[in-house]
Amino acid sequence: MSITIKEIQPKKKELKKYVRLGIDLYRGNRYYVPPLIIDEVNTLLPSKNPAFDFCKAESFIAFRNGRPAGRITAIINSQVNNRSGKKELRFGFMDFIDDEEVSKALFDAAIKWGKDHGMTSIVGPMGFTDMDHEGLLIEGFDEMGTMATIYNYPYYSRHLENLGFKKDIDWVEYRITIPSAIPEKYARISEIVKRKYNLRVLKFTSRKKVRQQYGQALFNLINEAYDHLYGYSPLTPRQIDYYINLYLGILRLEDVCVVVDSNDSLVGVGITISSFSNALRRSNGRLFPFGWRHFIKPLRGKENVVDLLLVAVKPEYQNKGVNSLIFCDLIPIYIKNGYKFAESNPELECNDNVQKQWDYFEHRQHRRRRAYRMEI
Image (cartoon, rainbow, N blue to C red; front, side, top):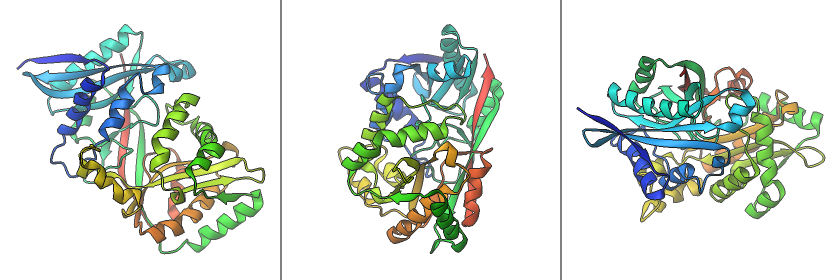
């Protein structure tokens, strides 16, 4: 029973096979949400992803008796390492069959590459930046994933722990029931905060205006708000342009809320999106030739789940109730559109202030994911 490891050339044709391998391992699993293949390929292509301005990466496929059995990408984010003073290797885009010889061979290859580049520890699963998927699923295997998160089989954590990995940090996720009306106490808090800090909500009907007036500023705010979070990699101007181009076209602008002060300076933003989970499952991650048809429903806001992709508040306004303005604006829109549930997506388990906001709503913590670490 031989195992061979192949380095993947950073070319579109090779990377499509690499991405398809990850999808094929979950064939028949009703909870797995595949990525959009073209987006995943572009993330791994140095010519497309501006994160390669400060990252190095190498991808590997494992073969068991000539058949694909697993994959892994090793990543060095020099921007994060320079900020932290660590020599840290990231691993991501990882999948494998339930065979510990396969998983060991994959990690051996990734670790060797990292050590050859001077790294002394390995952490993950993580992507190039926080805009990529991160965190191994360890609870919630019977819950459908989201477009922004990893789904993996339960045996993955056993493989990592048997290799010597230990918990570094956890994220939790919540499913929130959309109320039939804004809770009275929540609405009062929103009005108090609005008057006290002289804030107001902006809504847009033109994507061109969003790009021109607040495109770069929105992501600069995200950089400020998330800067202290685990493993955060600040987005560069080139990355910001990349993500504006990637996401602006699929956002329903009424599902986006911007909060500004009396000088029209950004204070907070909530970027939410009708769930693409069903569309990605039905299309199996393909847009063409016919997969695009499945995306019409979420693009029109006709799913019953809304994903809370990004909620960010300027540091000096955090813990002052600004989030209540965002959701007091969005909840009536959710009700109008027929959304029944909201997915929080990952929140650091230690981020009590973020999690407390869900106490005003019916909610349940339904998934947990973990970053693992090991010295090498």
